[in-house]
View 1 (cartoon, rainbow, N blue to C red):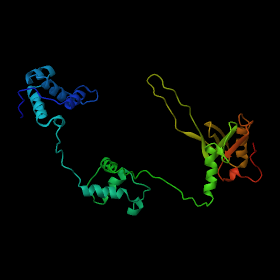
View 2 (view 1 turned 30 degrees about the vertical axis):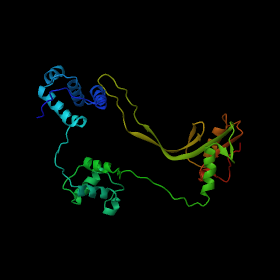
View 3 (view 1 turned 90 degrees about the vertical axis):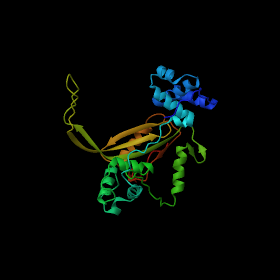
View 4 (view 1 turned 180 degrees about the horizontal axis):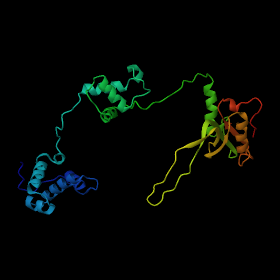
Length: 293
């Protein structure tokens, strides 16, 4: 065990500032704070016995950290690296699991749409990559390389040759521009669409409020009232939503939504109101056309 120096520890200005931050910082771990305080007191010329008495430590503890700092300076106040438990899995096994996660499940004959950590763990055992492995271990390995097979992204390739000019008109409206000129204060942009097959359900029994020694009671039996279509219009620049429910979709229900919005101010007296809709049949009926404004 190192022997404590007979004279006070000499500190550089940098070491002194670092030790003060370590000794009195609110986010410093307790053991690091103690070690820094031992060194600071030793630098003031105090003996090991006095430091141990003032800090409530054993004299051998004070002697140990004082000696380590004298030999290796600031890095010596951190914990030494420990060998720890021998690894259970080889680097090759870890790489094989990551490679498996980067394959689509059908490529390995697994009837899954995407991998999950538990499914990967079972497949690793089935392939004899490892005799046993937990889902948490697999998840930790994948996290090292940011591999997340349970997430997916979808996309679509644009095949319409006129997509760019069509998209430019919509994007210009969202940026409050039309024909190269900014929209006026009395011009508005509405984006509209439908959500079909919304189930209309109601609970068969009312929910009972909690009482003395009784939790709230909820019955999960529903009565089904068929399906509805929800039509919504969104004022792009005012962040306002208009909605209504209809039994079906079509040009007539859509025109009811248009009338609901256009009968209100400020749209009723606006100079122009632009409606952005998709090319669905609900928006291009031959018998009806949206009113111009």
